[in-house]
Image (tube, rainbow, N blue to C red; front, side, top):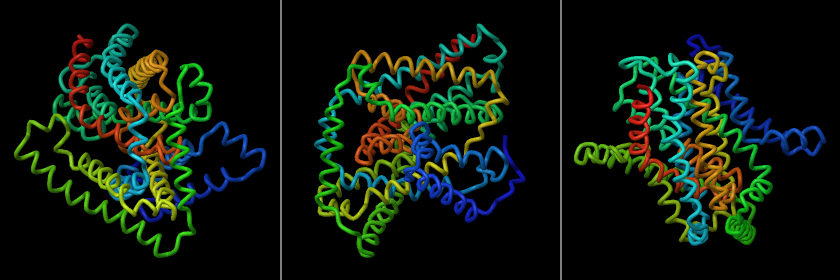
Length: 416
């Protein structure tokens, strides 16, 4: 459902509204009155930062398709915030987190690959027409693009669109299902953060390594904390956006080079400039963490990074239309069952491997959401954990096309 005649079309006005929404959310979340304390115990701040902007699109105040705010946030602010969040990271501590992060990541991938065909089989038993169609309108073709998005990200989704060639109408529905079902799961994951101790008890998980990383980062931040001067803030922004610009230079050079001279690497999404943008910004940020630049954490580098993340969250939220779920109930049913199978596999894997809730959440989001939302979710646990989300999301990009292609073939077989 698109709003061609949106009430507000000026991005400067829309950005102002989004920033006022974020300010209102953060201000009320800091109030100690009984109402707001109870309210934010039930509804996490980050969930509200997604939901309120979505109302602008749902009720036709803005047309998110015509706004450039998400593009600016994902291409300018995201790489800059990745640099500022990785600047202070202790890479040795991240490696001490152990293999459980990878176990949960691959469990998430398996959940998506087998969840798609199983969901089609289940729904075909209820109403075969919902998962039927022929040629470009075959539902499995549209579903294959969701698999690309849910294992890797936008680049992998585009790859599946080129590979399986669903009709434009089917692709549009697929994107809606992808976004809304993924955001419902994101909301549940965020609600789980407040109950992570009970969930970890259920998984019989040892959370020590994550607490150690968190405590070490907090201790380091306190040891170098200072009131930031204008110079500090300018240096932090200069480094963040300077590296973001440098990352664009590298991405714009290497992506076409690979597309031209090594087209076989396309299946790894290595011809995607967004992939190289994220990888380069993260790599340089980690490199800077071994230099004196790390001390800028004391002047608030990660806090500025988190501000950028929340602007990105609001821009993503604005793209959602929560009423679209009523337009294609059958398609949404497949998406919801698919996600339920993914979640079930994640819970079983976490219980068997005694993995903490953090690894379940980040392993899932590194697949379903990729670099745009895995660090957001990780930062909701603690800003120092954001790079864990980034590193796993990059792995998702590399494996996304393979996993999505396999899922697409299995869904084609399940549709017959």
